[in-house]
Image: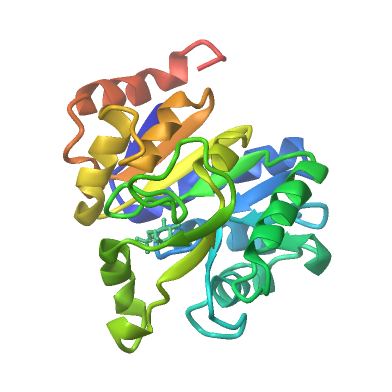
Length: 261
Ligand code: GLP
């Protein structure tokens, strides 16, 4: 795992966006795994800027989102469909038919989840998956206790996640209790992973994910088992890392390092 710590949220977002742009410049028809939440907003803004000002092209890109709340219509302002449209898709040129987001309103969740997994496979698998992290260390909606081999499925949200996400809803009771989420196993099959975290409220989760044991109790720790995982952090989210000096040392020596680094 590569740990890249930037002073600010803006610098962290730019660095992560440039990683996505690097992939699209070498593979214009890449399959991207998309994440929601406040964390990747800066990354999406930078990708939109690169599209508008530097011609970054999404016309051959396919996207798969990680998760969606159950029970919200796609036009509900807190649905992940709405989030993606407002914050990313309406500003770039990903073809509508190439956008996949789990349905939170299907009549058969099991069949839908199987179909979603199959579509990922038929599209050649995810090249690069963007991830945030919950304050309890979850990725997507893989709450503590999830299997590290789990696949796309219906999941009951943890109380801590409902409380964290209540800030986006009028009342805590409005936060859906269920979601459809890619599994940890699904996520680990992406060829590259980039996880972003910012703010001191993520410091515990970041420490546990990067330096703690690999455990289903902190599903982001599964990234330790992935051969190409990069973690982009701002300074406040990195305060509980014991190896901080080493990560900074690597960054400092990156310009002169052999190519494969
Ligand atoms: C939700 C999402 C996750 C996201 C997490 C953190 O639980 N399902 O994908 O990483 O929230 O959200 P935020 O970035 O707003 O802190």
